[in-house]
Amino acid sequence: MRKAFIFIIFLVGLVTARAQYTDAGAWVGLSVDQKVAKDWSWSLKWENRWALGGTWHDRGFVNAGVGYRLNKTWRIGAQYRWIEKQRVGGFYESGRRFAFRLDGKAKSGPGELKWRLMATKAWNPLGNNEGVAVTEDFVQRFRLGYAMELIDRWALVPSYEFFAKDMESGAAQWSTRFQVQLRHETGQHLSFGAAYVWSDEWQTTDPWSEHVVRFNVNWRLSDLKAIKRKKSVPPARVYSMQGKRWSPPGKSFGQCTVEQIYVSEVHPRGRPADFIELRNGSSNACDLSGFSVTDDLDQEGLVFGSTILPPGGCWLGYQEGKGSFSFGISAEAETIYLKNSSGEVRSWEVKVNDDKHSVSFDFAGNPRFSTPSPGQTDPTDLTD
Image (cartoon, rainbow, N blue to C red; front, side, top):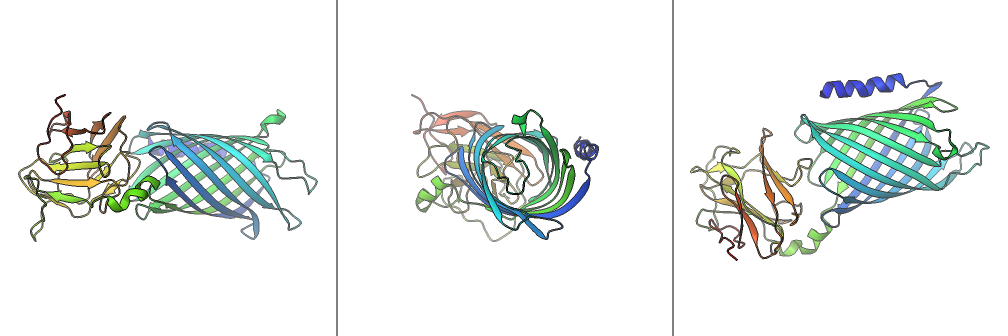
């Protein structure tokens, strides 16, 4: 299915190619984003584009946007763009656009389908200082892509995008864009991507196409809410079955399996921060190296290095604590995923409406409300 999808995207691009001439260019961008709450975020992106074989600085722009996650599948956003485009005379002309976006995603096979609906409207279209009528005042865009992990932290993302421009005139001009991006996550905050882009203005008064090499670097800041309380959050720790701090002996241990490890307690409104407890349900000590815990399978979450859990013992981590996870846990409805290095996944559903109580799980995954007891073996069940 994955190969068929890529082939279909490429085939559609070939069919629509009707350019009278072909150009080559380069795009270089830098972006930064940050969560300010569980579902809210902001982003800022700067990009410069060169055309005519990379010899002509065509334009530069800055995008400022805000986004809100509706659920695991859908996300909405608004974006403001300030742009400067170089004209034939060598001078730059500025313009501004506003955009509304609706993004979606869904698991499909070994990867993930991604799609985007986007509408943009010019507040002041780039003017007519070269005697050419300004069009593209209102543009609608649709993108369909597929993200698949190649190796650890490397992903391939092919996508196909369709543009309908100058919608208000009643004679829309159509164009397409095919992109293949190689993306690498260097850590929790920094990622970069290199891509080949083929833009095809095939249904316009002057059809043309362009081959582009594109580079992007993205820096994800720590969650704003987490920064405010990070100093008071304890680091991740390992406890024995008796609830005491535990340090491993100086020898190696076998890797844990998904059958051994389970989520034993979660508190989405814990103090001093949300916490997750992972427990070793077997009679043998094991190493969590290669495991990851997250609230979204599309995000890497916390990836464990060498972390030894004693028999019946647990790992306890607080949000944004040293050596712990960074994502927040929703009290209304949240799913915690535990994945090993082979891609096997287990999940636990968390729903808590009372900040005085946590959710505890037995080895089989059965939930119950309990009094928060991080690091302890037997939390007290809620009886009232």
